[in-house]
Image (cartoon, rainbow, N blue to C red; front, side, top):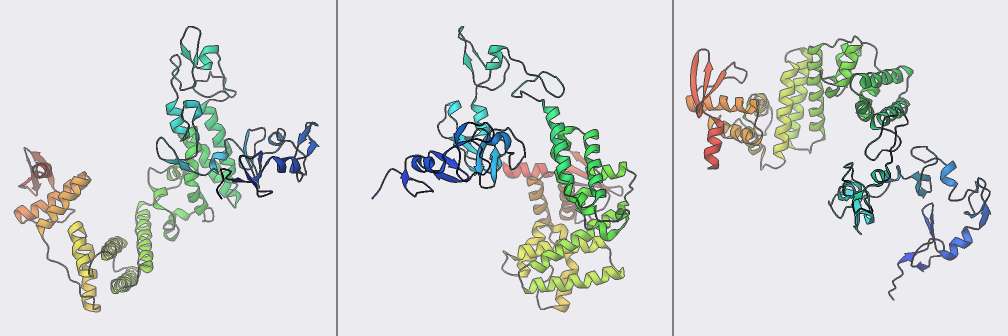
Length: 467
């Protein structure tokens, strides 16, 4: 038997058209509301209100948000949007726990509600709601407009000549702000986040260093960057919290840190250098190489077991032993492990390891030197049966043209030039050779040690292929 009543009361289990009350994730029909919410004197306003029978504080629905802080932001006196079993959530914090649904206008997953104020009866997100609001012809702000006696349309601020001033700096507010300007809001947010984030550190030195960094960030950049970007640097300061004072001179400690934090342009490094810390560039490069080697080795160990995977692990172990003895450089092993990682990725879709090797060198001819010794190792020590395919300059030209067409850059342009010299003039040069490239008409003049060669321009070739 079908019924139009699809809502079920959590207390009595009956079907109802609508609920009289929702309280702490429970629904109440009209009868259950009268039974579970008897008339009781509120302990705050001393008025007779319907209060839940299990509420020990005896607070009515009006006084509850005034004296009970929001579970998330800990503020009182805010408008309460939802009361869960864990406590109340104010209107600002509720959006962070609300279920994401599809906006009927833009189709994105977001917090949505019916856009009745902009004439839309279906659920829409806040971004679309703002875009659908008309602009006030006087102040240019998107708000609800009111029709004056003269027929003109204005927002309530322009209609009533209402002005608001920032409570922090007394500047006149524009836009939607009513109490505080954006700069003062950023300063307040930065102060709150700085204090909350500092509580996550275990030592006093760690807390002080992070607070000092945020203060430096606000001074050298601005309050907005300090407020909104400080969270991304927390892992770095948490990592170095337990390190000794001279950690930046220790290779084993440097390789544990994400290299992005140690770039010259990174904020943590600039902050530490302002405090007198001097980084050794060679040590940083070595740490980066070791970190990449460790990451690639971890990928090898977690890869699906196969003859190729076992050969890669055996070869990596051998080369690491040679690295410890000082027979090879860390940069060499880094290039080799990165090439083997690419080979392992190609092997997932190839018919055989040999086919994977050929596909890899077609797409990335520059990895031929890095993968060569591994292939030689497999021929002498395993039954994998792979060998280096013959070098084909034409394949190199085609691959470099594809790379240049997808991601035009000076590096891709230079790589094409080397392959073009090999293909058109049978003149092979190492990739670190010092050459001078000059565009002449529809070609390139490449000069190496006072010898000049002409090769077609990659832009000309791509243009002819497209035509």
